[in-house]
Length: 237
Image 1 (cartoon, rainbow, N blue to C red):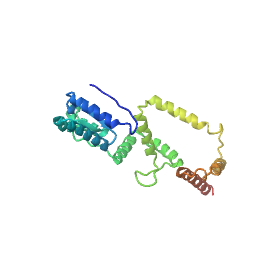
Image 2: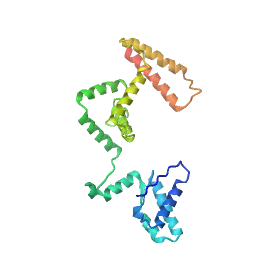
Image 3: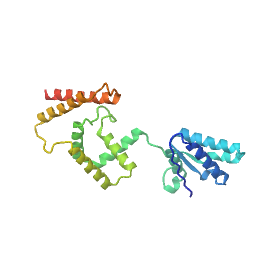
Image 4: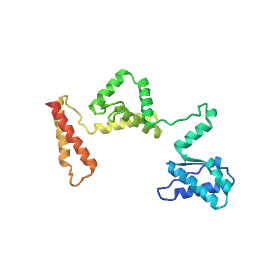
């Protein structure tokens, strides 16, 4: 099997190069069904297929142009589905392949968590999540939900092929970095801690020049800091 990887930036002529490669293979006698090409979008796949067909017609290769529809040209998800359907019997799977939508992914992820985490562990996580503002606001799929953050971390680890020991090492490094931001000793007086935190937040708010940095992100961050100070005043009162 001959595999060729082409990596290039936007507007550098990737579609043209892929068209040339596919046409060359078809003219060399390779059947269209033996060609696989992936794209990022369905639109790009349709454009690539049409360019190949037009190029073959222009050269009078009408039979080859008609066979282009048999080539596996599409997105990674689309081609994966087609291959699973084509070889479902060999893989021992049903040919009825469906891609899960986002809501189904959330449901199955939560079901998996329910089987892994015991109630005591969940209670501890929810206690920390509540203090960090990561508890659901309303509904099952609310924006502020620690499960979504955990799902994001799991997806990141899986996509980067992180092993368990690598994740543990990353956790240790993260804790070391966070601990450097705190004093060696922390008083148990929550009132004193809250006052000091408010002072630090107010210092940040005063130091940020919104006239010099008028971006929406900065303004939003300052607004959240002011809201945090107001909430802490309400709690202390």
